[in-house]
Image 1 (cartoon, rainbow, N blue to C red):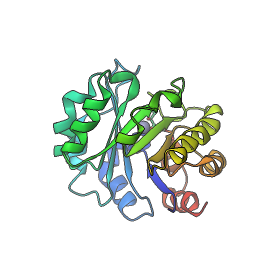
Image 2 (image 1 turned 60 degrees about the vertical axis):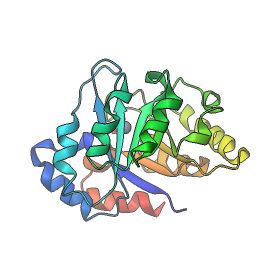
Image 3 (image 1 turned 60 degrees about the horizontal axis):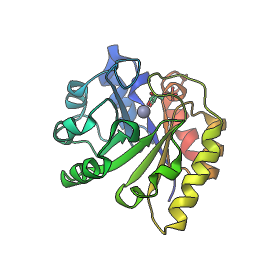
Image 4 (image 1 turned 90 degrees about the vertical axis):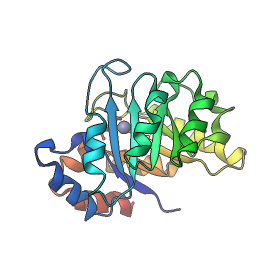
Amino acid sequence: MKHKIAPSLLSADFLHLKEEIELINDSEADWLHFDIMDGVFVPNISFGFPILEAVGPILKKPMDVHLMIVEPEKFIKTVAETGAYMMNVHYEASPHLHRTIAAIKETGMMAGVTLNPHTPVYLLEDIIHDVDMVLLMSVNPGFGGQHFIEHSVEKTARLKDMITRKGLHTLIEVDGGVNMETAGRLLTAGADILVAGNFIFKSHNPQQTIRDLKAL
Ligand code: DX5
Ligand code: ZN
């Protein structure tokens, strides 16, 4: 499978949200990544569901929703109603992850589990069969534009090994500090989808940057 690119809306110009969505629609981006933060699970607050509801009807790409909130299971129905394609919940915020994953899938959405940089991939041994995707954080969640944590490359390779060993087809998405250089190494290590915020939206020509990332 050719790798996918998911620009992160967090780095877009919110004053011109409609134009930013149109830019994504007319680009080679595969998904659009939405970062929802609650100021509790992570030390920052971004935007909430009204943005997904507003953007949904004009967006032509699948919505990849990354919930950086406590008790994400409370919002499964709400996220499904926005038309989201993928709902990612943090392992660290989900004491009953198996139940949460099942509930996400029941709505028809794809289910992803997200790991913070310090959470080891071996903790997924007994849940990996049930998820469609694992989202590895390659920065501490909460902010765009942070420096890539090097260890994430080796972590991606270890997760890829686990998936291959089990004969699964679970997708691997990596999020944080992605640029041309880190992207190349993550793809070699086994990543299927790369999220990029600042590198795309703060670039001189975001559509060309997406094309460059797709061409890797
Ligand atoms: C961080 C978010 C990321 C962020 C990535 O908490 O989960 O999706 O937008 O931004 P960059 O690519 O700028 O590191
Ligand atoms: Zn994210």
